[in-house]
Image (cartoon, rainbow, N blue to C red; front, side, top):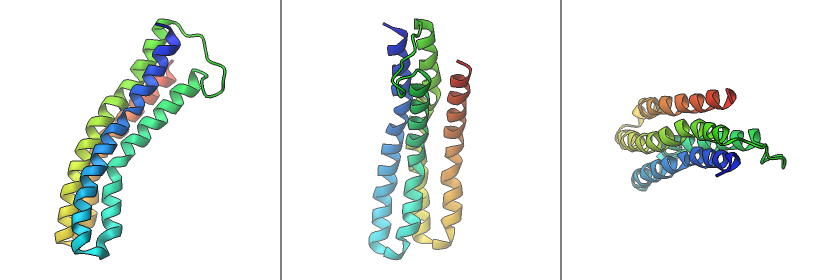
Length: 153
C-alpha cells in the first residue's frame, strides 16, 4: 500500500467525525420537533440547540481538507509519500475522527436534555447551551491535536 493511499485514509478517518454529528443532530432534532409542536415560538432556540452537535462534522471536514491539501491532492500535484509518512497522516486523522464520533453523539444527548429543559422553562436556554457546549471542549481538543500532528509532518 502506498503512502499516498494511507494519507487519503487519514483524511477519510478525520471526515468520519461527521458520523457523530449525524447521530447527535438527529437525536436533538427529534426532541426539538416535539417541543416545537407544543411551543412553536421556541423554534429559534430549538434550532440553536439542535445545531450544536453538528460542529464535529465541521471539524472532521476541516481536518480532511487540511490533509488533502498538504498531500497535494487538492492542488493536483500529489506528493510522493513513504509508507511511514502515510501512516503519520492516519495518525493525524485519528484524534478528530474518533473523538468527533463520540463527542457528536454525546453532545446530541446533552442537547436533548437541554431542549427538554428549555421546553419546560424557556429561561433555562442559556444553561442548556452551556451544558451542551461542555462536550464541545473535547471535540475542540481533538481538532487541535489533529492539527498539531498534521503541522508536525
